[in-house]
Length: 226
Image (tube, rainbow, N blue to C red; front, side):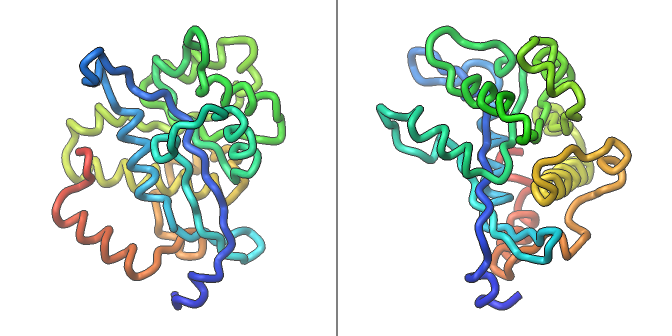
């Protein structure tokens, strides 16, 4: 792809919604920090990636992760416009994400905004086997009963072979890109099993620098967090 076309690509903003892992009084993480690792990994994989829409237009992805943003006293004022202008919202689900915290809970504010906008379908990534069902069991999220959560068993995948890890991550990115391309719509279970990643050139593209960097990382290590 030429640099000119890459530079002229339209922008699709992608919002990553997740529960930040808890820290103790010393600042050390308590329990799994998988959601943060996945959010960072998605940022690295999706940022500046190009996707061709159903109309043939090419869109470059920009990924919003709140870790990258400075603290704001008016965070809520910034949150809603960011959600409104996002092409897709990717929600990382684990046990901690399901339960609303006391006081301000920006994750659940994001989820409640989503569920109040019926035209917006979230892309659910499930980091365990129970969180998706636990979330939709709550009456206010029961509207998402039809939404299939993509498996993202991050901690479990770390114990698999390098080939299995690569296949899982490649399939997951392929499913996410397909869903972004189709307005965050649900990928059927049959399609999620057969779609193995980035083999469809018309759907996702990388510029030469991205491809070179991704290959260099793959030769050194599967992924930064594995």
